Amino acid sequence: QVQLVESGGGLVQAGGSLRLSCTASGRTFRMYSTGWFRQAPGKEREFVAAISWSGGSTHYADSVKGRFTISRDNAKNTVYLQMNSLKPEDTAVYYCAAGPAGQTTNIMSLYHNWGQGTQVTVSS
View 1 (cartoon, helix red, strand yellow):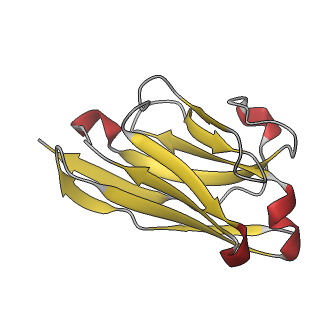
View 2 (tube, helix red, strand yellow):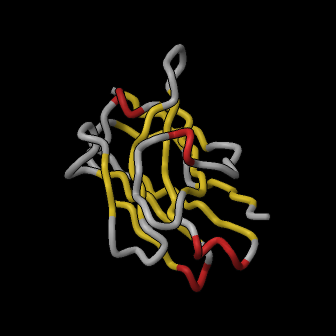
């Protein structure tokens, strides 16, 4: 069973940067793709980015393309989300989850083993 823990959230000014980490327990983590999602107050959870098990394929929401970068280090069982040029509308709780091995999908129902989330707040 894979357990995921997010970290790295915080308060940052608009234009600033943060790097989120998603650290997994269990050797099987490297068999899965990994996705980042976010949920702002009063809004539905939405897809942010995904990366394949090898790191060779990535997929981004249009709203974060060019600003966010997803990467992974399987030796450390960790997936990262580097967030640059942050905007107030990026404020949300960010979650990571394990996804299907062969896809970097934005379909939320295909993800499992969700972490507890980490809060990102961007001030204007």
